[in-house]
Image 1 (cartoon, rainbow, N blue to C red):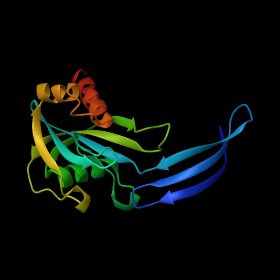
Image 2 (image 1 turned 45 degrees about the vertical axis):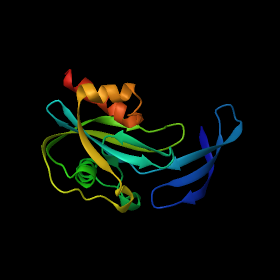
Image 3 (image 1 turned 180 degrees about the vertical axis):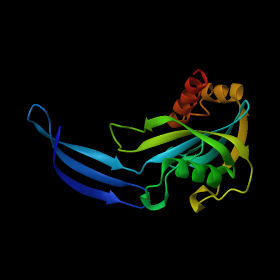
Length: 176
């Protein structure tokens, strides 16, 4: 597929929407809308058998959801993934990790968005004050053992695809 032309449709501090005029392999033309968002980091905070999650209101869905701490740098800045992960963990939960191991990478919605995420396991956790952004003021946090975490997925209380995929990455890492 060849990009013939790109037009920016919308932009704000968190994302950019562009429309690309494309040429397919068979020579036909078309358009493709792409949401450009910066790379994010997601952190799986693990203490023994307990996982730490955050719950917040997700405006596009209109409901509160539990998920692992995750996010991007302000104003679409590029930060080193490990630094971004440590920042998100501290900001959203107040936790600081003595050890961070990268578990892998996820593509959020590759048919729609260019956003990719680095997934980290955080252990040797020390509690401290959170440093939440203004948009995160209603955020709550909690520890959940793995049995409860899995039950929350089954009850559809955890539906964030990145959180579920990160948990799968954690289980694969532990089997090594």
